Image (cartoon, rainbow, N blue to C red; front, side):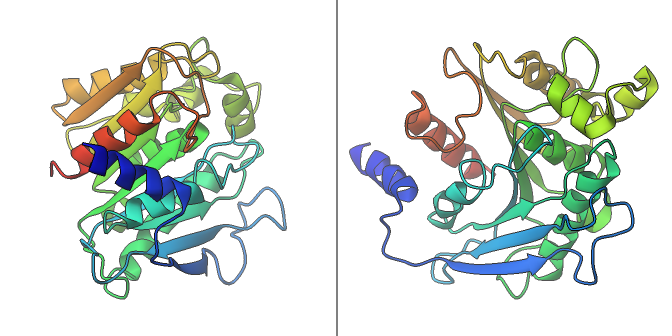
Length: 272
């Protein structure tokens, strides 16, 4: 047990001897699509390719949070890369464009990023049928959107969600993420369109969901309701609710249940 804990701790302390190979890809090389809200806002993929000697063929696309007002690239993105690399998993962190009331902007970035990962799968020694998506907070909304609406090469094989925003419905949603994604004055029909728990089906990929009971930023009901819908549709899912921790802990070693989280996640990834 001590050996496992030490290995996981080193993964986040950045003390492993093997340097990471990082590849940057512009998601839209000929310029951002016309739907972009801000002219100079671009989408990029930062790919941390697993060491060929330990690569398992698995990969994960990471969507950081930020309330759709920014992108928390470090604690909810790049800091996770080494953890996955140490398990032989290639990790790609998505810097997506911000919506400013146009939800299709970041959501099409998430789906295109999945397509790009499959496009380069053989080059990165990745199995195109073993690519998942991960997201924290608003990034959890983006990740679960890709999981429930992605089709063909844009559909992930599994999903990992940390304290996710799931619904856009009033009273449960995170209002800041809602307003930044959809605008502040929208009809319920549009809110339902982007409420991912309402779009779960039997082909939605398996999920690992983590949240804290005392999260005052994003109501735990977001993740719990999503889990309930997955269960109702016979989708394998694992739900972990820690008693304390609040919101936004990401990769922080200061999160009380950090080591338990790493072990639980590793165990889940090794279960299929």
